[in-house]
Image (cartoon, rainbow, N blue to C red; front, side, top):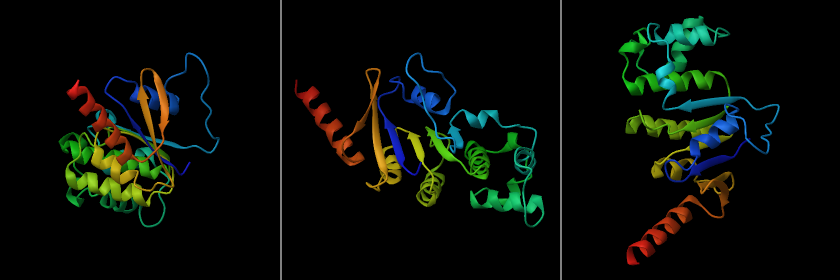
Length: 201
């Protein structure tokens, strides 16, 4: 539960289907999925931003989902968390419908972090600007839980899976999933070799 796993493979190969099986959103047609009793899934998908309650502001939304805030006032506790994810203070009380795609993503990431999860990420960079991607990578570097990441952003994967001791690459292709024996850089080199061979033929 402390491993960083990057799931790689072409579009349509089943990367997101594998995440849905891991999360319990799909039931396998054969075999079984076993999860630790201690597993807390915090999931981010490019589509989850669309599920925000648009008429609420970020503070109202987070207090409704996570009413157990402690310390200073509950509102100030939530605003401090939003600030850590880079949402400017003047946007904390703005209706979510008026926030940009990147700002909405920050609200979702804040909500996920408040549930203290092990985490699944499905194409997390689609709504994010470069500054937000860097902040996400920095947060994942500090995160001690496990991370399962589906992304086509090689820069993101390289940074999230740079620790060979706690990183794995899983390749989804032809209806199977196999652990890649090597680093993400090795995987990229192998892909380039395959492309080179195809071009030469």
